[in-house]
Length: 279
Ligand SMILES: [Ca+2]
Ligand SMILES: [Ca+2]
Ligand SMILES: [Ca+2]
Ligand SMILES: [Ca+2]
Image (cartoon, rainbow, N blue to C red; front, side, top):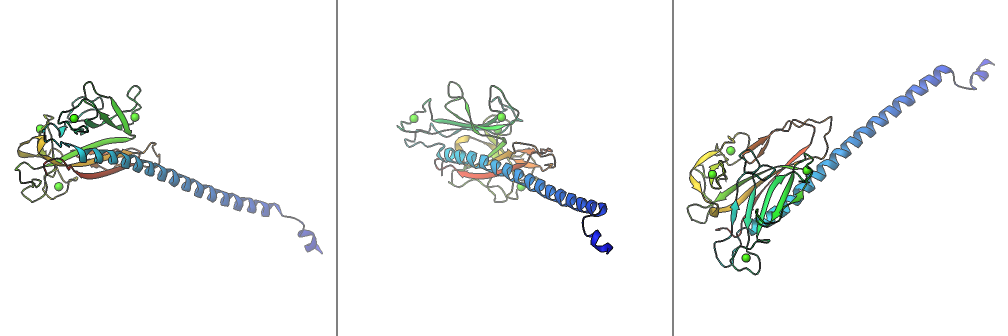
C-alpha cells in the first residue's frame, strides 16, 4: 500500500540532485560555448590580420616589380630611398624600413613626373590627425615634398623590414657572400647607401641567430645596383586577448620585436625581383 503513495512526486532530495545535475550540464554547455566563442573570435582576428597582410603585400609587390621601369633608358628611375623613418616620416635609425621608388609611367618620356611616378611605403599611425596608437601601413603617391600625403593602405601593420639584393660587380647575378648565399643588405646608418648584410652568420637565413647590427659590406652599395627586395611585414590583431600572451621575438629585417602583450601577431615575408633593375 505505501509504495503507491510514494510514486506521486519527487522528494526534496531528488529535486536537489536533479537541480545540481541540470546546473552542471548548463555550466558545461556555457563553458563549451565560451571556449567556442573565444576560438571563433581568435580565428576572426587571425583571418583579418591575414587579409591586411595580403592586401599590403599585393600592392607592394606590384609596385616593386615596376620599380625602375624606364623604357627610354634615361637612368632617371629606380629605388630612390631606403632610409629608415619614424611614424612622422622623419629619418630615424630606430624607425621602420621604408622604400621609395620611381616608375616612368605613360607617356614614358624618360622624365620623372611629379604625379604618380613616385611611390613610397612606410609605417605610420592612421588617422594622422588623430592617431589611435595602432600602427598602419601607408602608401604615398607623388614626391615627399609637394606630392600627395600618406594614404592608409593596410591597418594594424606594426612593423616593416626591407633588405636588398644587389649586383655590384655587374655580372647580372645577385652578389653572394663568402658562403655562397645571396647578400641581403640594408642601410645601417641612413645615408641611403646599402652597407651591411643581415645574414651575419652566413647560413642563408635571416633569423634570431644573426646579429641585428649586420656585417659590414666591403664597400657601400648604391641603390641603382639593387635587383631584388625582401619584405617583412608584422601584423597585429585589432584587440588584445586577456588569456593570450605573445612573447615571441619576431625578426623584421634588422629589428627584433618582442610584443609581450595579449595581441596576436602574424609575420609575412616575401621576395620581389625588380624586373626593371639591372637583371
Ligand atoms: Ca615620365
Ligand atoms: Ca592607427
Ligand atoms: Ca649606409
Ligand atoms: Ca643567418
